[in-house]
Length: 393
Image (cartoon, rainbow, N blue to C red; front, side, top):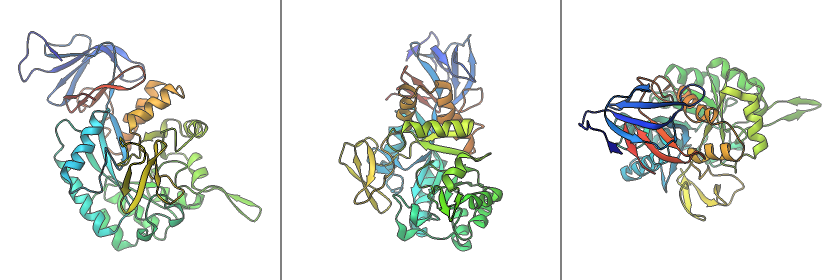
């Protein structure tokens, strides 16, 4: 950072010398940041503290609404302040400025305690770190047959008492299986509590998804991963959750684009079917940033880093990803040729909207939080601005 002739503590931060990704194509402009918010995007910036980005692209900070951890730490260990701080600082250095801390299925008492502990970070964001904007409960109302890296022993129906208890915690999002007994009533209860409801880790058929959608479900958790597919009932073909998701209207959906969970052809199918309702999530775990062979846990399930992805030890299942969101966008851009503006819509603007944060996150516009990432041509982060504070990788 280089200072101009005016360099008082209350001077704005001026990001200049680059292109700014606003709506549509990037424009040559400067971004003026003051007191943690974007003041304006202009070609005539005022005096202030200048950060010359050297011709790079200034884009909205990334918003990851499905992430379990990183750098050897997990959000499940919410009482470990240093561990949670390590995750959030690790992500800020990689362009991720906002997250929903995702929790794998566990006993209700454990989940309740963890959510309460994580909400302290929501209410008091850490300086220079990604903002933990809420909690995503991935379970426990999931299907054992689609458990993946979730422990089948803790999966259960969404009975009214359990639903009331979790809804009272005000999670930002919950993933559940629409076919489980009581699911539609559970959807209604969570929606009333202000929680976004998603379908995932499920054996649902088309009618199950339709009923849940009528009750208020709006999102689909990681396409192809933990989703039932087409079945035959006699001569009849019955769509599973996967086909129903791809054919859906009005539902948003996510993909894990680490180059491991889904091959390019499936990513292209999702893009063509969902269009502007598709987002990218990392589903990253404590294994993100760890070397090959490292072991980590998702709740009580032991996983390890193998061939650049997380796998459940002793089982034929992925154990989340070990890739963070910025690298996934880089993969989609450099390997599949997806356009930059579309990728930042998938990795920032839309996830912010899905999580109910769209009025302050996910765009470069006056009044929005000053959450920005400055990227190279391959979308690798050069610097991040988190609520007005510059963070280097």
